[in-house]
Length: 301
Length: 291
Image (cartoon, rainbow over all chains, first blue to last red):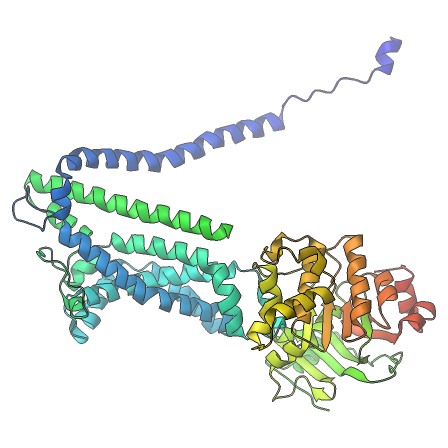
């Protein structure tokens, strides 16, 4: 009896009652969340495998280097790859300086008032506008009004407009990530606002800006509707010429070519479309991977 | 005396108070404000400040002597950081700020209409509470101010002399290319002081420069302040009364009470302040009875 009095009563640390119930829910939620993640992955994987089975037999060097043809076995994506690259290069050239400029103005120079809040909200809305609307705008303004025709220039300008809101938003976020104390330190040393932006804010925001840019380019690379709307051709049997005049050449891009093949009745063209999709997927996944690498590399420095 | 009113007019503040049924408090500036001897660096009179209509300083007036250390003490929220940031126009950067009253630096109106805040900040350097070196090399941190201000001398010499004055040279001379962020907290703060010194300012404002540092690093910064006071005017905000007592020549005690935010209670030579405070509230604060 005396021993029982001196030793303290043993404590049970097993889960029971409320703790047990909460822990059970916590364990279940983990599996539910995993399932949510897998759902997206599995669907993508099935689509990818199905597509690969159809497409891989058509995928060879001839397919990459041939111009389109009305014979499925001779048709290739040379002009659409070159067209895509050319259009995207100019999309970036047009969109990025404007987007970064707008973001810097909004974050660093603009008076923070109700008008700016409205502008910000509307830029976010613009990012959600369907791409075909940008296509209609491009058709009316660039193709018709500015008489650029269904050219590389008109396509690049249209896509630049399309990715502009998205790029502005990611740039604004990247600029916001730069610590205010860095700005204060710079301004307190007698640097002007512009010197502060140029020397501290932009270098600090660069990883985020680049990531946003690459993701936006990946979106533009897959864009079909807007370019069909401005009248990009599907049958281009020449390379875009490397000159200013070449900017006014008509063009086609990978997604347009794929779209064109999918609406043909012959199964051979469907195989070509699948092969084109593989090329496009590899390019877009490559761009996304590049975005990750660039961001990590710049963050480390 | 010039009175400046910017952005939203604060004058309807009293009216709004009256509508809420609470009478606006008539604040009379403290009488326990000493006139420092010798030449003056700053002369502040009747300075009030509002952040988006919320008052942070109420009719503060004091003179800050040249090449001396002046400490601003008081509990959190008493307006001491706000006051020091008025001296190099850092408050301009906060949207919705309204400033009333007059601040002159060696007889020039800091808030005059022809005054460029960039020029003010070049002459009046600042060190912040949390060390904020740029994510660049030690060398580039020190050289930055000189570069943006179009310095045309030998940059290497400037970097060396600034780091020496900030008592950091011996610790970093072999790796000036190392990132400023790789230094310890105390070293980072001395780097920030070196950075400010490289601009060849007349005044260095320090906003709680030691609050993020350990006691040994704090001691180094305090020694540095005393040493720099031979050439520079130093204004330091501190939470730490012992620090004010150790380093400063003059001390200002500020307080926010139920009625008045950011008022100056007492301003005197540090020794007088800590031995014979004129105001009961000063005595309570420095003897640790509140705050």
